[in-house]
Amino acid sequence: MTPAVSFTKVSRHFGAVRAVDAVDLEIAEGEFFAMLGPSGSGKTTCLRLIAGFEQPTSGRIEIFGENAVGVPPYRRNVNTVFQDYALFPHLNVADNVAYGLMVKGVAREERSRAAEEALALVKLPGYGARKPGQLSGGQRQRVALARALVNKPRVLLLDEPLGALDLKLREQMQEELKSLQKQLGITFVFVTHDQGEALSMADRVAVFNDGKIMQIGSPQEIYRRPATRFVADFVGSSNILPPDFMQRYAGQRRWGSLRPEHIRILAQTSGDGVPARVAALSYLGAGTRVSLDAEGLRLHAVVDSGGALPAPGDAVVLTFNRDHVHVMDEPA
Ligand code: ATP
Image (cartoon, rainbow, N blue to C red):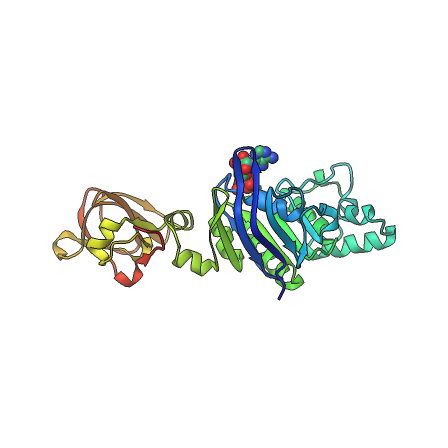
């Protein structure tokens, strides 16, 4: 099947800054695709390249198999939901939503019917007469979404659309966006620096660093089998194990990663394992995070808060199942 979006060796440089650096990428039709990475890693520039707000310095971009380089934004079947919503304050909600259709010359009646339909999709039926200033942040976010959906794009681009919402609302919107995407079957490309958000919503995640994609995979692959130290560190809270440590305790001289939930903490008298000292405890609710100093490393374990907990300063022994150690692709 022709991919919805494909990048071949796409670069976008701003002077000496390689915002996007020789990126290869294929996003399938109907996929919920997340671009994840720290600030400045090139995610937004990639999104803007898909939207047509930026042009590549080099490389090839195709949207549904057609060359997109040089094609202006309004000629692409793509719409963007911006982080700051970019609503027109003087227009009411219905006119904001119908704006794109008005520009295209769609008749008034047809426009307002489509706007009402889009508002119903985002669960704001009957809000058309209000001004954006009379809405909550979450409602404004929904209006911005309706304004993009009314154009029936084949690809919807979302640039940190939930960034301004509080945690509870964000979680609710994550679920709604996901089910809306399934219902409509539109390809969603979502930019976020929040790994929890990317892992919980996306079918596949691309992890960005320094203008490059470090890894693309399903949330499970990215979380369980990070390709590099950067991915292991950025996605979740893995312990990174250097080659010396790995050789000694896991039998191979490579970089490894180990999830905090896979470390067991035993009393010092219990013999074999990694000698360690407890540095600190943080209560997380069901689990407690234990910071440990071992072999010159700072490791973290998460243990059941209901069980016996060590105390800061305790000398302990750490054990783990070698099967739980993930060996990374990076050379030692
Ligand atoms: P954030 O999460 O902070 O939005 P990001 O991963 O989306 O970050 P980009 O906005 O794509 O990152 O920026 C990538 C790099 O390109 C940064 O170093 C940024 O300063 C630079 N950059 C982006 N746009 C421009 C521009 N118009 N002119 C010059 N440099 C730019």
